[in-house]
Length: 253
Image (cartoon, rainbow, N blue to C red):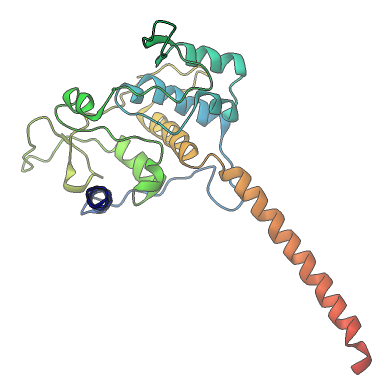
């Protein structure tokens, strides 16, 4: 019991320090325009689908989104057949079979997104010791949210002459300390968008950030619609109660 408690405390400490480092002494990310911002904001389906394409073709080689299932992609406008095709391109371990052995099979829409590495040790070994974090809640986990993620993805620059970078590190204007283990993930034309949108670094960063914002809050649009309905209900109820109050107390005036 005590060992478990210590592990939990250690995990919280690591997450807290990560958040602090992300805020740190880095340049404040510029404010971006997001379709999902504000009381009536909604997700741009085109941006979501492009963002998934960027994640699937670029980010998925290192980063997982472990809380999403392939069937969730139907919520951003993909058809069921398209989702089945996307899932089938990946393999998952299943079983045991009749012989008691595990086996590989194509993923189904009901499966969670396949992780790029089987465990943390393999992930570190494939990334020079750095651990690529899961991206499901990334826009919620970092100070600045979507603005920070967009800035980080598009903030790779040539380091100043006086800046000494450690081996294997890249210079990023918006990362605390300006040294980051992740090499620039995006480059001009890194993907060929299905809708023929020009794949600039800024466009890809905007699209994949939109996708990650949805991944972190897939219920956001429903919550906003419900919030508006509740506010309207309360306004109407307030008017009715005021009318009842005037009627009940009218004899005393």
